[in-house]
Image (tube, rainbow, N blue to C red; front, side, top):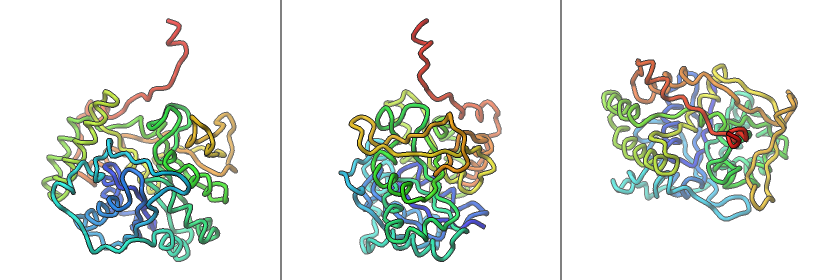
Length: 338
């Protein structure tokens, strides 16, 4: 049984990832912590508290960093909505006004000391809280089982700038600090997560099934996912949405579905055009680097597991299942010579 801390900037795919993690029999969520990223930490914490309520989770929640380590906060409200869930929580007037803030980094350290190698931290947002935890007790964080970070891009283009993925871009100094202090990180990058997406018609079908098993999730997920899909349709000409964070949860709990390579990763913090870039020389194979990078996974096994556990559904049509697989764009200069 894996003991899990989920550190999140809870937007749309984070919310699905939390629901997914809560229903995996091989994992126990011991703690959830929140960080500014997709939306400010105040909104993130409200989302996590609401998910805790409707998923009936008996899990402590601690809010954390409201700003990055040393730069101004950049959010992604255009992707996730002002409240992080497509406007659902604001439109419904859902709030937890008596919530006390703070304590995320200290709570992470306590969990690290308590569970040691049995603990996995699943980081679904910027690494600000984790960097703060390292600064409090480096040895405790180095002593856990693993940190799985949804973030980075190594061989293609980013989703924030041409070279960067959002979670690392928001706080590159935090990610760099964690690595430079000898903490090993498993990256689940865009190179992998953007080879899988849910088309709108499959999302619609899954939500219909969810009403039979988890009716409280349906209105939240319907509004949030439709907002998320509309963004991708306008920004990427893609009538569907990525599942970045649920894939990171799968990598943490079911590593047997994935292929990883060892590497030494550095985070660019000074570049005018490249701040937030995750840099690794993939020509060099190593088992002694400071990181692992997920480079392939069994996407259809993941799809079946996600669909059944979160949505209570099966995608039986093989064509429908294959429609969730896509080729990610990478530059090929030969295309320009035709």
